[in-house]
Image 1 (cartoon, rainbow, N blue to C red):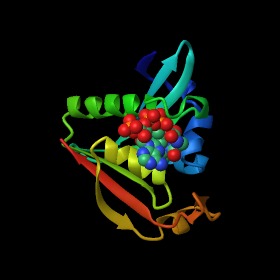
Image 2 (image 1 turned 60 degrees about the vertical axis):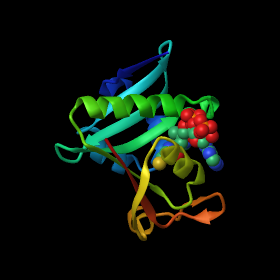
Image 3 (image 1 turned 90 degrees about the vertical axis):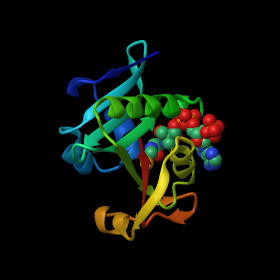
Length: 149
Ligand SMILES: CC(C)(COP(=O)(O)OP(=O)(O)OC[C@H]1O[C@@H](n2cnc3c(N)ncnc32)[C@H](O)[C@@H]1OP(=O)(O)O)[C@@H](O)C(=O)NCCC(=O)NCCS
């Protein structure tokens, strides 16, 4: 397995849309981002999208591991590579936003050292046309987590 930067032709759209169901929203940030992939042979089995917000802050816009490969520490491996890349670029902070209903995601980021920063109430209600439910919870609020280097 190897982690490498992906060219637009290699972007794994099914995976990207698994983490963010709006193609329009993904298109709005991915062209200004660094897209890193985890490859098994030629297949991209995980992806992370990093968008510089300013010289010191990098936001994780999207991270997804193929369903068949989830729960095998590959998300942690790829996020660790993204953190290392952000440090090398001179960033002082990483930011990520996730839904209030994403119990696994909230666990995942905190296990990687991220801390709760703030809540953008009704972000998902404002941003997505259809209501989102996860774990039986209405996904309304965006929880912002940060990792300071
Ligand atoms: C979220 C995601 C990227 C995590 O990747 P993954 O490869 O499945 O996760 P990993 O195996 O690397 O590890 C996840 C960690 O979170 C923990 N975790 C996951 N679900 C958990 C839960 N419900 N409660 C507690 N811990 C949980 C795991 O135990 C593991 O920590 P550990 O090493 O201490 O055991 C992946 O599940 C995914 O692609 N989900 C769909 C897309 C998505 O939701 N992306 C995020 C958008 S914000």
